[in-house]
Every structure is written in C-alpha cells, then in structure tokens.
Length: 309
Ligand code: BDR
Ligand code: CA
Image 1 (cartoon, rainbow, N blue to C red):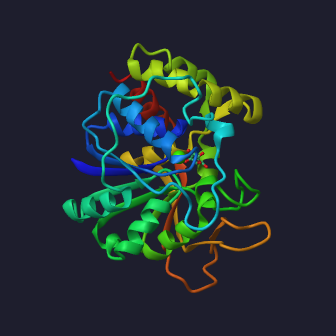
Image 2 (cartoon, rainbow, N blue to C red):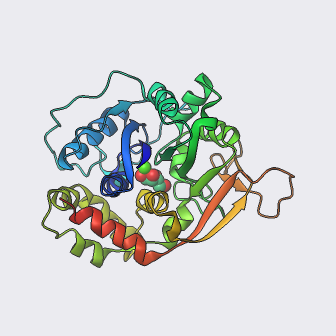
C-alpha cells in the first residue's frame, strides 16, 4: 500500500477528503498532521480526532502542529465551516487524545520511515510543512509525491479577489514550500469550481445507512446551506477534489506543468499564486496544475466514502 500522510485543518471539506482516504484500499493513512486554518488549532485537532473515531480509525495517529501562521495573525474561515469548524453541532469529544510529537517533527520522522514512497497531501495552510522544511531542508528528497490543495491559478481567488484561502492564510509558509519542493501537484480553487458537486446528489448520498454519512450529514449541513445561499446549486468541496486526484491520479483529464510562485507583498495580491503561463521568467516548471478531472469518478469516490461502514 502507498503510505499517505495528510496535513489538514478540518474543516468540513477536509473531513470528506479524510473519509475518502480512509476508504481507499490502495493507500494506508499513516498519520494526520494538523494545521490551524479554517478554525483555530484546538478545534481542528478536536475535529480530526472525532472524525477518526466516527470512521473507526483510532489507529491513525493525530499530531498537532503550529497554532499560528509564520508571520501574520490568523484570519479563519469560520463563516464557512462553523465556529468549531464542524458545523457547530455540539458533538461529544473523542475519547482519544492527540500524540505528544509535534506535527512538523512527525512529518520529518515519517519521511525517513517511508523514504521515497511517501504520498504527502496538504489540505490546509502550509505552516507545518514550512516549519519541517526549515528544520530539515532535505525533506523533499524523501517525499515520493506531494500534492497541495491551494491557490487560484488564474487569479480567481475565494478569500480575496486574487488569493485562495490556504495560501492567503500563511503566504510565507506557502512561499517556503513552493520554493523548496522541485515538484508540487496543485489542485487549486478554480479546479474546485469547475468540479462542483450538485447539492441534490450530495443530499442523496448523505442518506446512506452508515455512521460516516450520518455524522457527515450533520457537520456539513451549515456549510451546505451557506453554499447554496451564496454560490448556487453546486457545492465546492475543494479538499475532496484534491484527494480524488491524490488517490486516483488516472482520473485527471488535463494537467499543465508551469512555474508557480507565491506573492508575498502587493496592495491587493498578497497570497496570490502567480503562474508563469508563458514561461517568461526562465524558471523551472515546479507545479503540475490540475485543470480537469473525471467528474463521474470524483463523484463515485465521494459517494463511496460516505456509504462506507
Ligand atoms: C480551502 O480552504 C478551506 O476553507 C478548505 O478546507 C480548503 O482547504 C479552499 O480554499
Ligand atoms: Ca482544508
């Protein structure tokens, strides 16, 4: 099995991506390293532990990471995910606690244990991975495949006009990460928008007779209602699409290779991902950009993850 390490800030769409990973027979989830992002670290850790419990995966270790972005104060996404990041349904906390090891150290240790084979998937701000890189710049040499949900490759941002949330939350961390890894697979916000999930179908899938579907129905209700009100008939589950690509790369129908850099300054553009589409700067192609993914395959993976017992 391919060892899969997920850095995540659960978060409603993160939770769906985790259920997809748990349901995949070809991958073994070897750990969850938790970032602050959608909500504060205390909540994202608590949510990760609860989701593992609901999915019957208390064998998966959960490591808490950095509570804040590297440089600037956090601006969260509680308006999308709820104040607790899981729709404010008041679930009872998991009985299990978090590991003692820091997420950045766990990333480095696991990169040694699974050197060359590791699939690292980042579904939140890149703070933990940036810190791991500062501790040990040789990390990229041991990661087999690295995939990030983040960015807005044509400048159609979701949190500012030009920037996507995960990158805008901690632009310095994203800059460190994109400068250090020679090759990053990027599932950006614009790919998410091109691959929305129809609310009517999602509601049917959530009716499956499984603990996972029942729990997910509850924690996602608030964000689905918000999404329907503000964005219309499709739900944009960014992290789920990224996970589909991670788990089933053959589902990608169009991927472009280009240089990608992160904007750190700018009056309106801090946190933007600048893609050199015409290769004008003479930089290496460090990013594979997801443009198209087989929609039926994506929906099948989501449906299967919710129905699993
Ligand atoms: C990303 O930001 C978060 O709100 C989601 O979980 C996803 O990772 C989308 O911009
Ligand atoms: Ca996320």
